[in-house]
Length: 208
Image 1 (cartoon, helix red, strand yellow):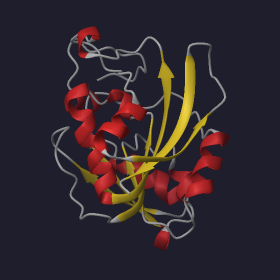
Image 2 (spheres, rainbow, N blue to C red):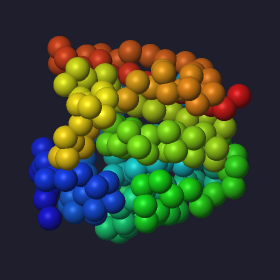
Image 3 (cartoon, rainbow, N blue to C red):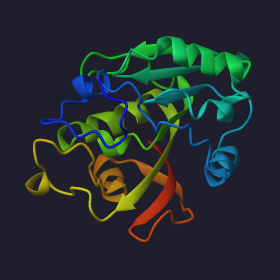
């Protein structure tokens, strides 16, 4: 088990890796980026049905204060944080319904348009090239809109040729993927730079 954010596996297998990491975010909870809060509130009205893909230990849960019936849903490949996520939701006066998939490319156990929005924060960068299309399509299938928080980082592997067995961060071209998959980008925003090589962004897309 590892609680190190910089832990590098010998060979990256998403399900095995994230069920090995004891701390999926950072050792100290970094809190919410005000720009993420503003972007979410701009696009997601009160009373929405919310799904979060890859919730970690619940860092985004304060965003969901106005979720329908004070309840929201999560989907993840890691299932060792159940108690932590329940406690994080309860601390916000919310209830979380947790779901897990056994394989990275498994279909999500929800009907089409079950949710108003799926939220993914710095999770898609850990989805390998062979799974990213299925993941993006599943998020769009089960919800009317998808919000992605991520960053463009020059050092991430951008093609299969740049990938090593230990690669666990990927530089997906979200704009190109949306075009390829028939997904419409509804809004994007560049956020404040964290460091010179990083361009954090927020994006919302849907299958219109």
